[in-house]
Length: 334
Ligand SMILES: Cc1cc2nc3c(=O)[nH]c(=O)nc-3n(C[C@H](O)[C@H](O)[C@H](O)COP(=O)(O)OP(=O)(O)OC[C@H]3O[C@@H](n4cnc5c(N)ncnc54)[C@H](O)[C@@H]3O)c2cc1C
Image 1 (cartoon, rainbow, N blue to C red):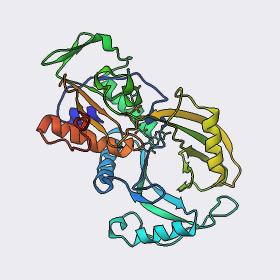
Image 2 (cartoon, rainbow, N blue to C red):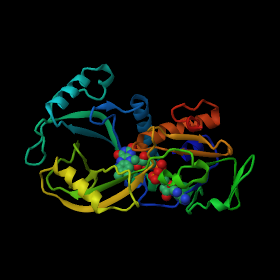
Image 3 (cartoon, rainbow, N blue to C red):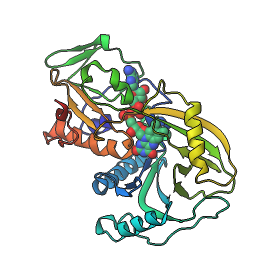
């Protein structure tokens, strides 16, 4: 995203990236959700960020002449009378009007979904097919000769006062956007990442609900292929690797059993590490001693909506001198 906003302003960019099918972006369900959590709280900056993200993904759809960003209807399952009351209170708040328009309780077939207290619809959510979008963007970079598919080697980076050089190529600046791998970056050791591993299952559920995302203890999200659903995701703060685990699978199946009654079959099990952050705000800015070395990271659990908005914000800071928002500027840790 950052490379895109810089190229739009006629900057010459080289992206160095080793393709990783298990990156957080490739494994993500790709949802942008305006209302999250047990208390149904509005996502930070939702009113500006979600329409902006949509406009950017639509721009990409037009450019690539492909479809990979779609509105989705999320039905949040209510688990008690208290939850019903909390939701009803939210519906009457003007701030939530755009996202909780419909005060009707939705009921699912009880043979398929456990929903004793029903569910409610969240408006304004979307889904990005991340792997499709990223693969198209990689092709665009290749066409522009702006992609170096390589494992980054810190030994080969030279940081001078006015420029940086890497394997014989010179640039004014370098920006690290390595996701969870940034914990090994020597220039940003001081940033308080608090990584969270996430696992998901792809399952086949014949004759289920192909037009709604059902959100209980887990998300049951219809995928493009008929009868396939994405079940996600776990949040694990203690882990040894980025591989799918027995523990993650059991947790997902346990949570799934609290929502799903229909029979299903597991097709795939995936895992990735999210670049989550202690204060849940992105990491944007420069190394205090090497002002040519920047970072754009910390997208946490919401990269799909945060990345377009803050890549544009960072590009405006870099090229137009606009202030960086204090909440995202890494100066908050200096
Ligand atoms: C199971 C799961 C579900 C999720 N669901 C959602 C969701 O529904 N909605 C949402 O908004 N977010 C979701 N997320 C979070 C989202 O995936 C992240 O916020 C986002 O993808 C982070 O993007 P990133 O580019 O910072 O990191 P990544 O996607 O990890 O990308 C980092 C890139 O840097 C490359 N790289 C790193 N180090 C090097 C190196 N040394 N050399 C070369 N290349 C390198 C990697 O190969 C990779 O391509 C989910 C995450 C998980 C794990």
